[in-house]
Image (cartoon, rainbow, N blue to C red; front, side, top):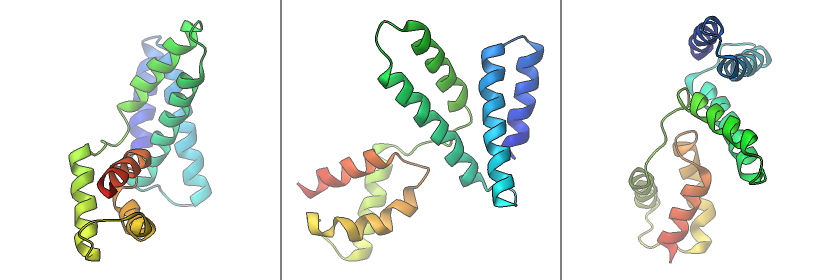
Length: 147
């Protein structure tokens, strides 16, 4: 269970006086615990991964919107991303995403996808890559295949 692993790492960070690491790990434990309470059941590995990815995405948005002269915020966001990425599920490569898209196209009997097929393709495709690939990457690859 990810929550227990993160909690142990948080204790280590506390003992080593790594306050920044302890803070981000504490926040992750809090979010995992809250999600489990709301669900009233233990989280699955996918659900835990989704929480970590959501936190990473929020920190990345902070990093992207941060003014260039705020080096302190950028450094902290980069550090937090590095810490959280150790707990994030591994992401699919572009080739792996293309392979999954090709499998879906074969399943649907589509040789050359056209824009009107996009909804039908995405409906089957997204559950297969959820939490394993960025939605924007999947969308971009599919759009490229439609050209």
